[in-house]
Amino acid sequence: MKTQITKNFHLDEPIAKVWESLSNPEEIVTCVPGAAITEKVDEANYKGEVTTKFGPVKAKYAGDIEIVELDEANRTMRLKGRGLDSKGKGSADMVMVGKLQEANGGTDVSFQMDIAIVGMLAQFGSRLINDVSDQLLNQFVDNFKSKLANVAFDNSLDTGAVTGTVAKSFMQMIMDFFGNLFGGKKAA
Image 1 (cartoon, rainbow, N blue to C red):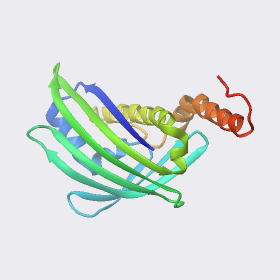
Image 2 (tube, one colour; image 1 turned 30 degrees about the horizontal axis):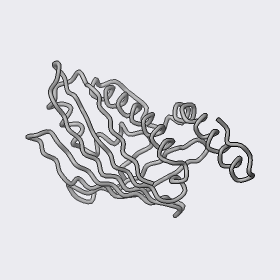
Image 3 (tube, rainbow, N blue to C red; image 1 turned 90 degrees about the vertical axis):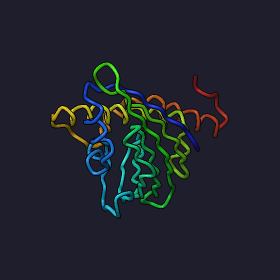
Image 4 (cartoon, one colour; image 1 turned 45 degrees about the vertical axis):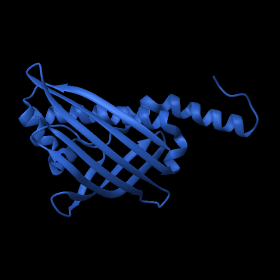
């Protein structure tokens, strides 16, 4: 399953401060819910892990992150990531392109992620993956804003918010699956 996620947000912080933080994987990972860097291989390569929850399904990926490009002059970055499910039931690949621009006395941040998921999580489909990703990205933005403002925050996976947001979609998928499996009507 492949999906594309785009995110744009504004920060009331100078572009130099935002760039310094976003371009440092060891600093920014603390803002990503459920993520950690486990090893710095060199200046452009890291090993890490991410734990996420899709409804009742919890997935843990261990993987590699490569900084393909960090263009400070143009404030653009390109990252590649690959993760393997800790249970050996799937993998996820990601390419992220990000850009910062000065705007209204602060910084506009935009990025696009192309994600390919194989295995157990792929069965949930791009709609659910996008819903969960959007919630996790919103939590990341909140954490990042707090970090830049030097306010303490919690980088643990906020499963309550994620589960609450996707519960209806997840339950609908289960009802649809069993309804189709046993020849029942698809729930509306």
